[in-house]
Image 1 (cartoon, rainbow, N blue to C red):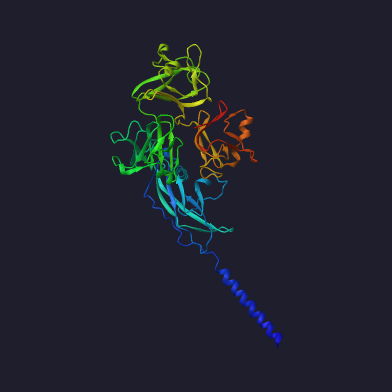
Image 2 (image 1 turned 90 degrees about the horizontal axis):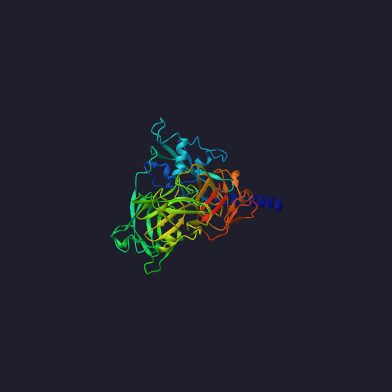
Length: 507
């Protein structure tokens, strides 16, 4: 009897333990996600323009996917041209894979999509912007978010969102600003000063504010409303908002903590990108000439030489002369009149008149005392500012690409990383590849094809091919022999000149 009682007690205990175990386990069983929907306020129509490919088309946001358990979620933004997603592919080897898979976010609730990404989908959908073809320029694209958890990737999908797309017909650019302007006043903007008589207007397109501006080594401030001193935005405002600010600006520490320009005085293009949170200086955009041109000839000006067959014309706006010019280590001279050798102005002419002359230019000491270029051969924006009496070499204005791009990814390229979500495109003109790139002290690699890891070209590839490589770059010695940046982190103008076999960095 005692033995039977013991057996019964064992059975009861096992049943009880099993019940407890099943109860505990059931508390951690994931369920299909609930309340998983987009939270974006979508537009009624998305007008897309080819010239704005890198601009934000939409920032997709969504509510948390609730799987019923506390765990990290991975979100993927997926797209299709068919409402039922029957054309969607998740095959990385498919040529359209990147068009359909727009990005991944681990734990976060947003993924941005660019105009370029929308246009890639529109092309798959059979849309085009040519009014002479029968293909439509309007249609729908479809988007959803996939959420996964756990090692088995338990998944759930948001509802599908349709967006109306319209391709702007023809090749014309977007027809003007579409958001309120900002303004700059201050002594650092000498054409404005600290008053509202002549503020510098920054026109706004898609929340990107830009203008050409003359800058001096002094302070200034942004204002969101003209004539309203209370609408000012100072240096700490942008720092606190997480902006990356061009190193030519600093906090003026003047009581109002305005911006101070510490670079070379002159005319620049200043852009405040409130989407990507950057403030950048670049070469000034070309403006309508309003004064007579000057000309350059000489062996140092590669496309000119010492003749009048193809002199380099410097257009003039507000007594500032500038143009892109391809320079090599030789002599050249400025001329006030095309075809007139007697109208020349050499190095001593400007030096004796009190000009500050770029250190990459010197007196050729060749009998005529021409200019001589002593820097790394390549294309530069050469500016002669007769107002501030400066002659400067800078980053060239963008030119129309005429050859295929290459791409950079890697931890050393801050805005890229080791993935294909946002590679850095180097556009190509006359077999010279260039881009402005934010570099840090880490590794990166060039790729001939976007999305193709097998198309990489590392440091030894260029070194073995006889390239002269900037001293701020070295072999990472990381197993893949990638490039490594060893200079001061920041934004650089990066060129790969496959004609002269030069890899160059400039700030």
